[in-house]
Length: 143
Image (cartoon, rainbow, N blue to C red; front, top):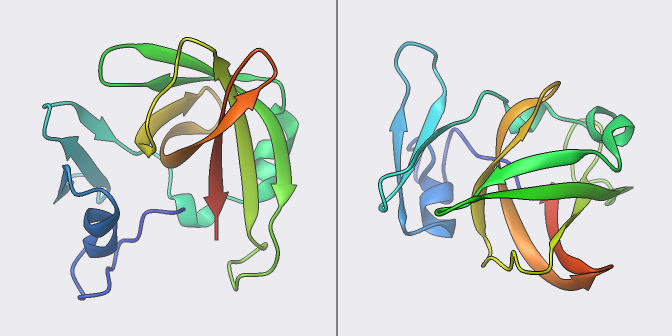
């Protein structure tokens, strides 16, 4: 689910604040990016405009590790599946990413910063979907 720069109430990120009530949004003045601060004090700056990402950006990175920053640790996510998710009006169509994490790394659904050397830092809303292989599965849907 991409971050919205213009929310339902006409304010930057308003719909994101509704999905993540423990987050506080601020506008990055120097770079024009959204910054997300969880109340625990962690600062995350997205270097990627999620609205511009396409399924083809992720397909070559299947089976590659994407380190994800949780509140207390870094979790190694492995991109297990990249699938189209229909036509949502999004340029290039909607798509879904399925990540596998180690079994001991269960985390609740939330927006997490996920890193990749070629794609940059992406703040992605991840939802746990249950066991996947020897670990836990997390899904991100871009519509």
